Length: 173
Image 1 (spheres, rainbow, N blue to C red):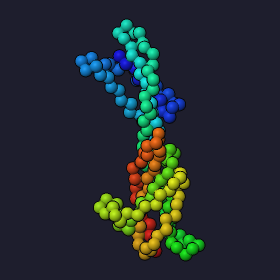
Image 2: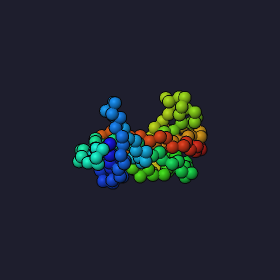
Image 3: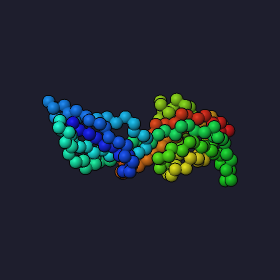
Image 4: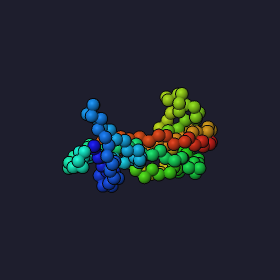
């Protein structure tokens, strides 16, 4: 048998798997942990246990693997037109924070279907920190705009990206 131990963020011991049988014909063992949370890193170690109950010591921990952050739950209803001091028009957007996010990206279009069908019409506004509101300067007023946001987190040098939030329509006239 093999027993697995999983740890989140190099600090929280999530427990052990119990005894997992080895497929002897293939010299293979597999275990799946199904309670992973978005935006965290996980490491695993293993030890063996023979038929007489004698256990080996724990192996070294595996390389850490990260999970994507959760998607922002939705852009807030507080999406509004703002006239800036320089005379430009902007849309003020707010969204629910993703606790593990390190940055966000806003995308916006004037036709909601463009998100899926016409990617060259998508405009983008990066938010390079964990702020949960931003003003997007709109050069073409007089339209309804559709906005969506996604969260980013860098884990061990790899960028992990959430799914997109639901879109939010805002009149920018």
